[in-house]
Length: 241
Image 1 (cartoon, one colour):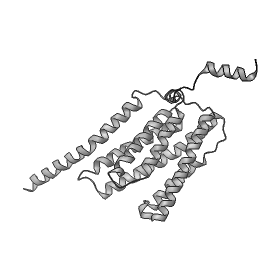
Image 2 (cartoon, one colour; image 1 turned 180 degrees about the vertical axis):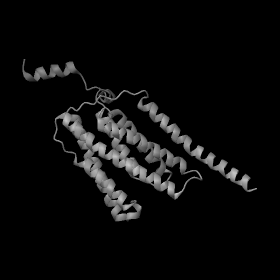
Image 3 (cartoon, helix red, strand yellow; image 1 turned 45 degrees about the vertical axis):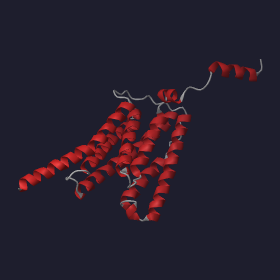
Image 4 (cartoon, rainbow, N blue to C red; image 1 turned 60 degrees about the horizontal axis):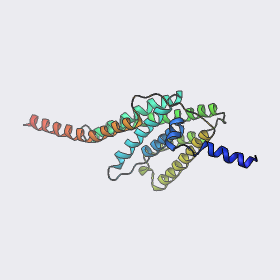
């Protein structure tokens, strides 16, 4: 029996490749990292139309939380998971306060500063977590894209806001951010191809159920905020009579 015939018989015995959802269940690294990177993308780029400035960051914060929840067996990813929980809580607080009479520039400033601190913390732990993953996979300890992501956030906060920094600077920052994310995607695939195995941390709620719960909270918050604002105005009116 020649080698070609042997390869054909082995291929027939093995059969086709398993479905993508089965692959993700066995080795959830790639799916979890996709969630994390989409989380970074949606929480970093704001579109001020059709309430997308509220919707996209909220979805991004939830995706980042779900991704790091899967990866939290790694000690650095576990710290990133805790920081992403706080980042998600801040996003919910901003969404709630945005529709109430409590909303003020001081509150916005506090939320912005705290959000920046947690984002930088998540980025640092992402870098350290990738380094640990590379060590476990036997790869060279080198993750420049994760390091540049932290530099990008530092520059972003130093400039204030993209809109306040000018259109040219904003476009350059956007282009740099896209390049960094693409590099991180390639790094994630490299680790996946190197055989880096992640044992998903045990959870009580599946990603789908937790995502549905977060979506329900996001849907209820604006209505709660409007109700609180109406109640406060009625109380103020009654007191002034």
